[in-house]
Image 1 (spheres, rainbow, N blue to C red):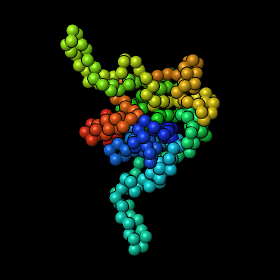
Image 2: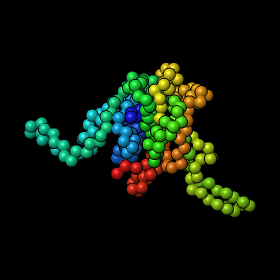
Image 3: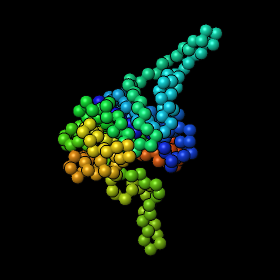
Length: 257
């Protein structure tokens, strides 16, 4: 099964990090968040990736072109222009990097990789800036059982501030960073039929607007409810939070060995 990952956006809300690199290349624990997302899928046996590049896409291409350099110990023998890679740490990945345009919207980027997925019965699709302890295998099984063209992962937005219950000026309860307001949101991690691409008009189509709305109207959009950890990296604050979790050794999305 293939996974398409959106990796071409500007990342304007985390501009402190994205001036020199695309948002999916912002590092958590010394590895791009894109790497973390791919590891989530790989833990479920999905190792064929199509990366939708755009803004500074060459940075992503150079990263994978030099993957062994990033992941292994290397000796450069300058006398005879030789490079020796030690303890090579290979991933079982096939990675296709596609230039989907600097200005394309999310739907437009998906439409541009149609040729790579149109013969698939279904494929996974996600954003290049969010992680979670998503059960990808269960999501796919749920999609197959629902028999719809699309399935999204519904999750709760992470809380940003503590919540107080106050009665007569006394704090009756305190909850540190509760989950949103009780409503579930689109957490990405889709499973899609290639037929959904027919719902996308052109480069300027936003996946989360007309296509998803029309799929819902047609009864072709299912949801898989995820009640575990989920966190997008929208801001520098989010990045710092994810880094702290990783450094603690208890990152919830690290479901691989």
